Image (cartoon, rainbow, N blue to C red; front, side, top):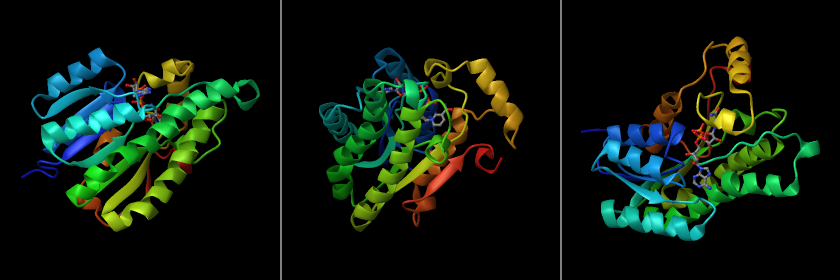
Length: 248
Ligand SMILES: NC(=O)c1ccc[n+]([C@@H]2O[C@H](COP(=O)([O-])OP(=O)(O)OC[C@H]3O[C@@H](n4cnc5c(N)ncnc54)[C@H](O)[C@@H]3O)[C@@H](O)[C@H]2O)c1
């Protein structure tokens, strides 16, 4: 018997990086997983690699309609949704003085509104299942005033707040909501966000108490812990997975 046997999970942003690792880790513990993303080919490939326990859904997290369709697919294929990992996110380089309102809102739409819509979309299913666990992927950027990424940092602080508000509202339904705060994790996000990946990685390795970059699996194992029964008395909590960044 595995930790999450037969539970139905949705992971957003699961076509690559941490989301793909979270989907694989949940499935390895026996969960059925719907992988959502806007990178259809990559998402389908990860779902196919996981096998019969997984399905891919096109899921733009800023669309309530896409969320409803993903939940409907999950229920049709695997039953009531008991786990949601709100992982999809975008990083855009830019300090406050040069970030346009449009760019600011675009990041908040994915990172914050997308997380909120995900929580709303699974509510009825989780309530019908008798409860569930929602894991919101924030960032150490949601605990620090990291320079050069005003929209991202703002969005990740807001995800932290949303987690606590939702945890308070949903505890009565048996739904737990916690946040994970990754530090520097080696994924495509760093270069895609407009950062010099090599400089970023070397700088972080030199400064972190644990002198390596994180890997997606470092975060995935914590998401599995929060998704499952070993964290049953935790809600509204925040776990940093940062190699000691916050204490450095
Ligand atoms: N990599 C890091 O150092 C780091 C650090 C802290 C937090 N995070 C957070 O971890 C999460 C995963 O990031 P990652 O490092 O795997 O990066 P990534 O860029 O590899 O993965 C992000 C995924 O989200 C998807 N996505 C983007 N916009 C979307 C949308 N509108 N709808 C659905 N999917 C969308 C992307 O297609 C991609 O597959 C993000 O929330 C990110 O902010 C990352």
